[in-house]
Length: 431
Ligand SMILES: Cc1cc2nc3c(=O)[nH]c(=O)nc-3n(C[C@H](O)[C@H](O)[C@H](O)COP(=O)(O)OP(=O)(O)OC[C@H]3O[C@@H](n4cnc5c(N)ncnc54)[C@H](O)[C@@H]3O)c2cc1C
Figure (tube, rainbow, N blue to C red):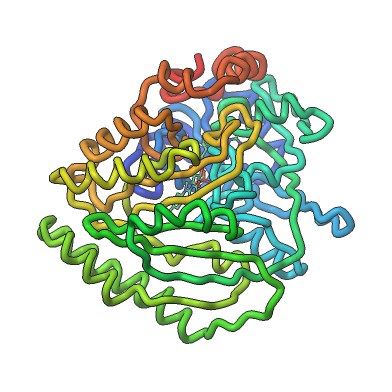
C-alpha cells in the first residue's frame, strides 16, 4: 500500500491545504479496515475537488485513489457496483462501453463518485434529484472497523439519514448505482435578457429535462441551456467540439480571465465582449455525459446555495442588484440550476424543489467580501449552502435549515462515538 509521512494536501482550487502526519492510499477493503483499526483520527479524500475544508487534517488522510475498480455490472437490473475511488469519468466511460449511462450528472466528472455523493453534488433538472438519488446501496466501514451495508429500500430510514454524510460516519467502501440505457441530449444554447429569462424560468423549467442558466455579472443577459433527452443520433462535429470545448472555452477564456486580473475594472467590458463575441447559439445532439459536462474551467472560487425554487426570481434579482450596486468585479459566470426535492437528511434539496445559485469568481481578491454579501442574501431567503463549496454561516443557522439535523448527529455518535472521522469542520458541525 502506498503511504507517506507529512503529506502535503492541497485541494483542487488551492484554497485549502494541510500537512497530514500519515497518508495512505489503500487498494483493498482489508487495507482500509486495518488503517481504521490502527489510527484514531482519519479523514477521507476522493479527488479533493471540494472548496470547503472537509478533507483538511493534520492526522491521517486516506485517499481512495487506488481503490478504484468497477466490481460488477448487473445488466438485467441495470445496476453497477464500484469501489469508492472510481471517478465519475471512469464510470461514464465504462457504462458507455456497455450501452449504459448515469441518468444525471453535474458540470464535471473529475470527482470520485463517492466523494461527489457524500457532499450532495447535483446536476440540473426539475424532475431530477441530486446525484445520490441514483444510489441503490452502499457499504460503510464504521469506527470499530465493522462493515455495514445500507440499502435504499430495505433500510430506507437509515439510508436517507446516512447518504449525504460528508465522510463523518465512516469510510464508504462499495456503492451500487442504478443506471439507465445510454441516451443523447439535445442541447440548445441561446442568450436571453436577464429579466425575460426570469419571467420564462417556470415555463422552461417545466418543459425542459435539464434547464440551466449562466449569468455573466455586469451584463443584463442570461445564457440559457435547454437540455432534452433524446434517442436521436448525435450530430455534433468533432471539429466544432475541439474548437469550442478545447480551444475557445479553455484557452481563449482563460486568456480573457487573465486580462481581467490585470485590472479588475476591465471585467465589466470583458464580460460584455465575451457575451457578444464568443457565445453563439448552439443546437446539437451528443452523448449525455458529454453535454452534461462543461469544458475544463480555470481554477476559481465557488459558493453555491440551494433555495426553494418558488423564490428563484426574487433571489436572482436581489443578487444582481447587490452586484450592480457594489464594487465587486466578477469575471466568472454565475450558475443557476435546479433539482427535485428529496428525503436525504443533509441534502440541501431536502423536502423542497430547489434552485441552486452559484456565486463564483476567479480570484482571491475581494472573495470573502463577495461571499459574505452573497450569504446575506442566502440567509434572508433561507438558503442552504453546498457542503463541498465555501460557506461561513454558523452551525445554529444550518441546524435551523435541516429538519433531520439531530437525527444525523445521533447517527454520527452511533457510528463514530469517539470522533475518529472528525476534523475541525466536522467536529464544529456535528459534535
Ligand atoms: C470544477 C468543479 C466543478 C464542480 N461541479 C459541481 C457540480 O456541477 N455540481 C455540484 O453539486 N458540485 C460540483 N462541484 C463540487 C464537487 O462535486 C464536490 O465538492 C465533491 O464532493 C468533490 O468530489 P471529490 O471526489 O473531489 O471529493 P473530496 O472533495 O475529496 O471529498 C468530499 C467529501 O467526501 C468525503 N469522502 C470522499 N471519499 C469518501 C469515502 N470513500 N468514504 C467516506 N467519505 C468520503 C470526504 O471526506 C469529504 O468529506 C464541483 C467542484 C469543482 C472543483
